[in-house]
Image 1 (cartoon, rainbow, N blue to C red):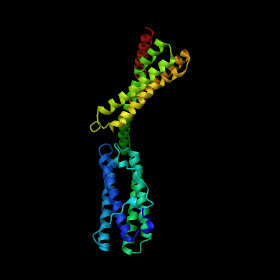
Image 2 (cartoon, rainbow, N blue to C red):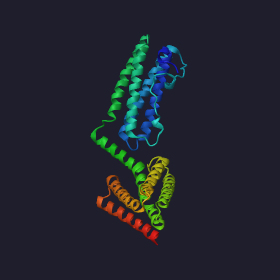
Image 3 (cartoon, rainbow, N blue to C red):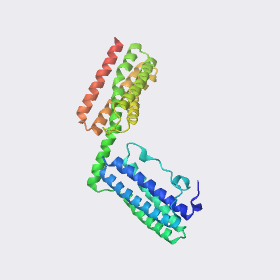
Image 4 (cartoon, helix red, strand yellow):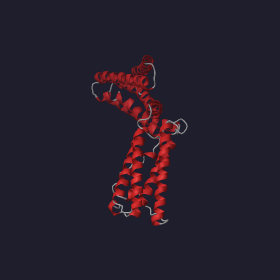
Length: 316
């Protein structure tokens, strides 16, 4: 990597052109990805993309006038001192807060680059353009900060859209997994416990059922749809969330059977089941807007029926 101090005026202009082209394309990606769910933020990124394009054009015109037609390829990662960026513009779906923070960081970094470049450039026309661009990037910096301070109505609409995406991509598959893992493993765990009266066997059955259900539910969720039409996000992320929550739901009431005393393990396991069912009811009420009473009654009745089925089968 080159040090910034070793760059000539020609190389500084070439690097500036590369920076503006990269930022322009990143903003274009942001605008394209966000336009459906966050149109106001997408429009602001579209405007910023156009301004970065204008900066690039002015830099190229000055470079051609000073140094000719060939522009050497010098990129951000070829020079020491630039912030290493995680390519969040390649992730799907984009997180609104992460995009806003990244835009603000980009503008601060670019402004500082122009200010330092102008300070060490002796050519008057190059210094003038770099100083002008530094001031314009400062206004971009303010605009990037305004992305977090849109008018109340627009901000409310975008936050609501962001909440719906969170529900579709994280809460919904997680809730499905937690319900399946907590409820479906009740029968095999308690059936094994009452059939063998052996906590080790109950734990082994519960662990196998939890992990098996987690793998099964994870693949089922991931393969259900690719998210392109439903907006439910990356299928493997949903599958991972669903699978982990399924396994967690089953392991919760399996762990007490590590205790050697059967009666104590059973009492603790029943307590864990009640906590799991209450948590499911709360999540449905909090995120899925289900009435608290109906969510609680539905989940607890279903859990009790499965629990009783396991106990009866184990006792038979």
